Length: 289
Image 1: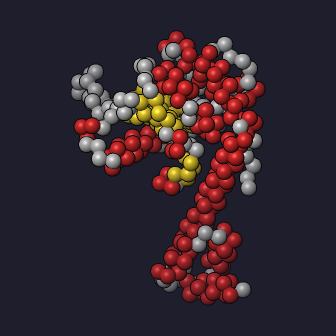
Image 2: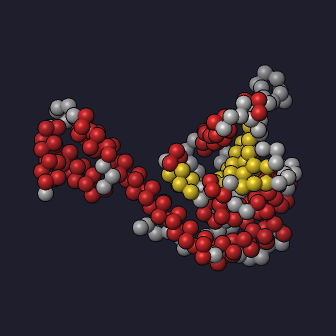
Image 3: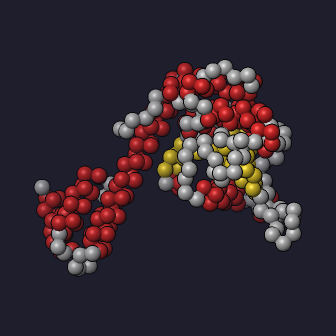
């Protein structure tokens, strides 16, 4: 298994810790109120959707999904490093929320407001802002917004405009961006102190320790699956360049193989073969060994 941080070394910027702490409504609601700028009533956090493996997402996805008494939906995710097409991932999340509700019988007119929030330990747009908020606006009529109920927000720990956002939000983002040593120093902010206590509680919990081990195993499985997928693509690419047509049954055997060692052997044989027929003979010999 690859090296992972120990639970004791995690901070709020680590996905597991963020998800564990924010799965508690009393921790999540103040954050949402500061970020969005309006009061939120009773908040329900979908703990069964946090800290789990999402097969549709093709990997381990740690986010916080919540709803309030008005059925408003909130999706919050930590991002420690830039990823391609982050804005389009937000679009995917909004669509995922809508499809779930429509699948449960909601009509278009009854779809609630939805907020997708990314907390970034970098500046996603290099404009020096702690907060970037996006809604669909009309290009032809300034200030005229499309009332589709969707809001996407990017929060940055690297902001340089503290005078433009709530001081509590600045304290929170600075805490999230802090190193392990800095993050353990008692904060002057009441909310940050609450989160510091929550982090200590997670680290002291045997249950959370066990869940973190499961999380590590999931990540390792995801990495191994990614390596296997890459080998499969390499094998098929090599075979496409060889004389002869790859039989569908052979293609299916390669695509369904999950054992990394067997795939490594297939890759070596594909690289050494001078034709598809020879490759088939080589892997037949390999299987018989």
